[in-house]
Image 1 (cartoon, rainbow, N blue to C red):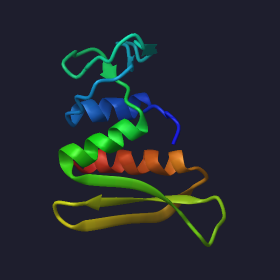
Image 2: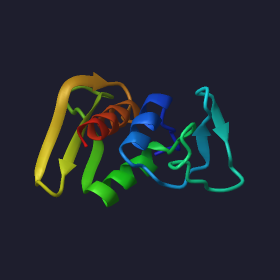
Image 3: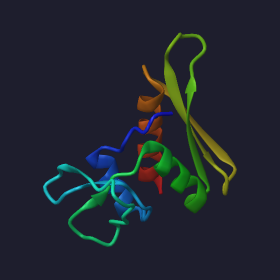
Image 4: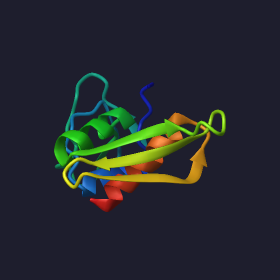
Length: 120
């Protein structure tokens, strides 16, 4: 997977839900994306900016911190279409959303991560 970054809406929600990982990028007070590639920084304590993790980093944080695994899976009956699954390892439950189909892996994963964050 490439290094697809979260958008501002997801970065805001991740911060609200306690994301505290080190990142190379962030959103400034006015919502502009900023690069701090010289070092990893944790912006969770700064009130006015938002850490901008990659989708993979957020996926990994949800798994390690909340025991929630989010994945995008191919829909085999339609070529190049994707849906997402959310597996809660604590409650041993699986949520599968095939109601909306995405054209890319990243789009499906983004929707799944957003849903998982909302449900925390």
